[in-house]
Length: 259
Image 1: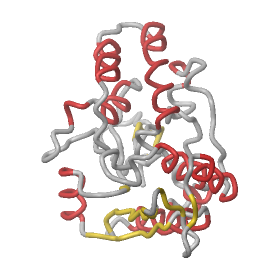
Image 2: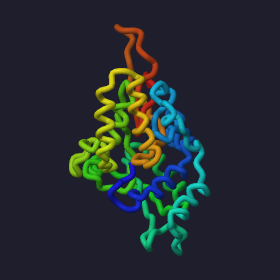
Image 3: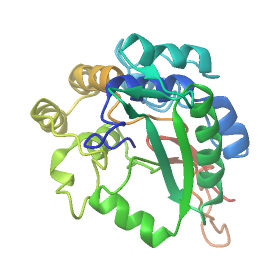
Image 4: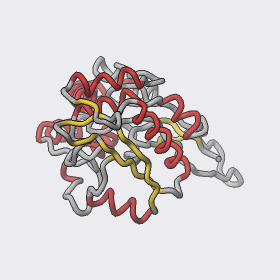
């Protein structure tokens, strides 16, 4: 979750460089021990869970492995120059990013450390800061961060995913419950309201197209992996439990039950 109200994450070129630098395969395999999958759609739509809603706008992909060299070119082409420390700066202001997540969430902490290393290799002065869960919750609620790890909402359709990401009514600056990045887009609010009233997958797919295109073009959030929903079930009295469950970490995917 990049903070869209603070430099440098409020700069599109910086968000593009971050997304391009991230090796989502490594994050999934090492940060999440292979229990979660990389999200490779530019729109953040999780495949194959929401394949029927994808349309053309939701099917474009990003690199699974990322590229420091490719990411390194993005700020340069946008007018950034490297300072004496070898990091990009814009008009003398260095692109300095602190990525936060709870230290107690050991997978988040590992992912954060990996991402910070990848960003440094791409010319972004990045570091990971592990904080307490209470401090993280407070920072997400009031927007006191530069870049943060956070999950998104799950649901039976992609509406819940995008509403949690983009609905400006969820962000009031002091007690945010979603739209943690601080997006204020009347166009997206209107698109989400229209999507909420759709009754068929065909209608939803049509109305998702501009939302997916907006996320792909503007990166208000930077999806990286799916997330498992950790639940157990007991077959002593009931049987037929599903072996996979919907879940989300910045997007949605089938997770695993019974762990």
